Structures are given as C-alpha cells and as structure tokens.
Length: 328
Image (tube, rainbow, N blue to C red):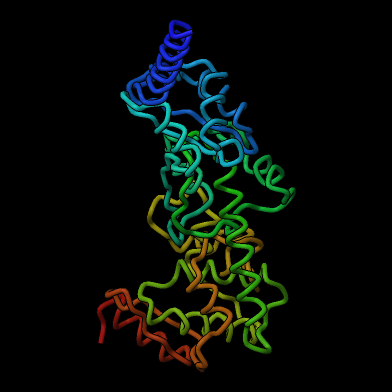
C-alpha cells in the first residue's frame, strides 16, 4: 500500500510539474515577435487553433485545455496580438483574456481629398489592403453607399486599429463618424440657411475648410458664402476650380483655369458644386451650420493666413490691390 501511495504521489507531482512547465515555461514561437489575429466571435477552441496555426508551437488542445482550467473559456477577446520571444502560455492566455491587442493608428487630416486619404491608407503596413485594387465606386458600394461620390464622406481624425485588420474597417469607422457628426450639426443648424440637405452643408463645409487660413476667420468665411447663396451670386472660390482641374492643376491657377468650365467651377456655375472637394473637420461643419452674421460678400487673403472681408465690390478691389498686388 505504501509503495502504491508513493507511486500515486510521485505521479501526481510529475503531473503538477508537467502542467507548471507547460503553463509557465516559454512557448516556442515561429518568429521572435509573432503577430496572430483572433477572429471576431472566436471561442477558446477557435482562438487556440488560430494561435497554433499562426505560429505558437503548442498544440491547440493544450492551449484550450489550459484556458479552460484557468476559467478563460468565455473571456477571450478578438483582435491582433503580438507575442515576444520568451512568453509563457499563461501570459499569452492572459493577453487574450484582457484584450491586450497590438494596435497601430492612421491620421486623416482635415482638408484632405479621398485620393490623398487612400494613399495614406495604402501606406499603412499593419493593415490588410483589400481595397487597394478597388476603384472608388467599388469601395462606396462595399460601404453601402453605391452611386455616391466618396469625397467628403470620411471624418478626419486619428483611427486606431488592430494590426492585420482590413482597411475597409477603418473606412467604415470614418464614414460612420462623419455621418454622425453631420447629422448632429444639421439638426442644430441656424434657421433659414439656404441649404436644402445635410449633403449641401457637407459640400459647403468642404469649401470653407479649404478657404480657411486661420481659425478666427472660419465662421466669417462661411457667412460670406451663405450671403452669396442667398443672393444667387456665384461662389467664385478658387479651391473648387483647383479640385475640378484634378491632375491638370500644376500649382499655378491661371485666368484660363477660372474660365474653363467644369462641374466644380464656381466661377462659371451658380450654386454649390455637385460634391464636396475635401473632407471637412468638425469646426468647418459647425461654421456652416452657425455662420457669422455679416454683410460681407467678398474676402481676400492678406498674406498672413487671415482674410480681409468686404461688403462691396469696390472695397474688395481695394483690398485686392493692397494685399495681392501691393498697391495702396
């Protein structure tokens, strides 16, 4: 009996030692810094399979078994996880349970076009680029906005994402953010604005975004464009012409360019252009929703980032001579 007891005791110690070894000994990794993605909705068993297939050199059944013993069966979180050489199975599972994912971020700047946004997105090495070979129409269709121009529909901000997540997910978040901000601003807008829809507000906000050199002028610039829309005057704003020229614009806006008709040329066409010309920030959206009360119909850059506003063409011409032509 004593011999049998010693046998079971020794066996028990061996099992405990083996479990401790498995749990706390460094697990083999296929790379010194291994990145593994656990899919959304993954169970402990599925997560264990993802870990094993992703380069963790421990059988999936052992990973899931240790996880169940540790009470982690229902606490595994999806995401991308980065494991350094020397990590133990216990620490690895705790990362999955706590949601300690490996993330990166991308910044979309106010005033950027969708083309520039795509270049920025495609330059992110931590993303899976499923949209790289899509055209703009395909992307908008994938986002549930088939037939809609993408310009202006993505909110400029910093977006954090799990490494190896799909780039379309970042676009979806930026789209949802702009829709939310636009809806909020539209519902709180001043009464009697000459804008028929949230989309028209978005278009005008994109123009204000491109025309604003200093924040203090933003609401005043919006007020000028609102006044011109009310009077049926053409907006006559250079950024819309530049946008309409597209790749033909060489950095020098000429008189011939102002006279060349395009759907976005607000010198040749009355009213708003058909689409936004960039992604406006929240401040530009709010400026259009709550423009300054002003009698100004014109403004010209003063050369220091600010603008000179005028209520009459004569006053505007004098300002142009002073600030653009250097004449008194």
